[in-house]
Length: 99
Length: 424
Image (cartoon, each protein chain N blue to C red):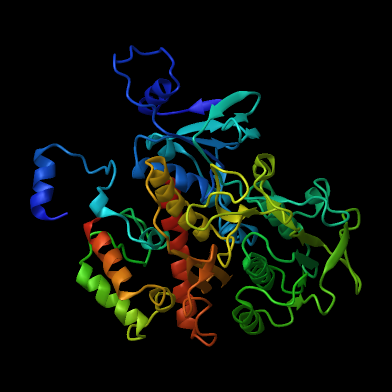
């Protein structure tokens, strides 16, 4: 959600609780699996980083580095090979919009 | 049956049920779709909450026998004295806070024609879609000598709770120098690496507390999950203490005798001080009641919606399913539940569900500071959940100990993360 939309939401008194994602914010395939390890909730004690609200371009770059073996990994090198560039972009864009 | 609900959900369900507790508006809105979920584990508790988040109009009821959920992942640590059972236990307070109605009781009858089920002594619940997430049941008829009474002497500890604590107490009571025997079943069964993680952590307990003891794993298979990683670690950490006997070497247990704590194979008899019998399994009871199991005892499903291939409008998740290449793990159950919730929200709005992708990541501890994993990414191919090439497997077999220590940390983080998502 960009700053303008956020402002509009606040002014209109929307809560942060999603009622139903708009059709344009379809959850891309694979995205919901990530929160098995990457915490959806803040405050979980784990070495694995949250994805929500992260910069989409940075997330895509990390996934490409994992897939190419350029970033050391334990499982993410395997996981990254399961997604095309288009899929990774969609997932990264979706997480960038989450809180 | 007792029903727990938030005030908001209660009012909504009262409206949905058409009762006259409230003055209804002159123009009643269309009845909201009803989904009943049976089973409050990693699959069921996830799908219930994810449905409310996908579409708050859907009236969701979660049927669960127990008020407290005891998680199986990490319960091997409880058996080995590394953690307390309370670290495994969760409740449904946050589920209720998400406007899911909790019906505490056991589903005893499913009428797929009438789209209803009976909970406990006779409370009938109606559904538009039913989701069964019953986990596993033990096949008490599959191993001669092993019935529910035998399990009091030779625990399976394959459903976490009292059985977990029984096995722990038996290990604690055993004198140094005793023989512990684990019997592992043929595929498929809940948590493929589980018997070997358990063997590892019991070996760790024996090595540190009762070093003259011995552990034998009698296996009905010649190969198992993460095998090379486990066996390399056993050689390094537990030489002479832990022995694995494969099917070819006579590992298949053909009968047990609880009176003497004896396990019999085609090749001989093992009289154990502590015997952990992990028996053959099948989908949880309600799956059979609903008619969604096939001759294997498990449930064939559509890989996009998780709808039963045998009975329409009933979806099955988690360990109970035949899910192609996806293993019976908590991670899988949680991932499937989120995909199923999205598909149900579409179906109940007369839209087509999208083709999913799913991930599984499964950690095992070989020692408290030694973790290993298996992972994969899956998609439907010709109606079967299939592993995408290059994603599967366990990573390098020769990873340094620093990596294993890091994976033990990731394992710990995984448990906290997933249980927070499901119950927190």
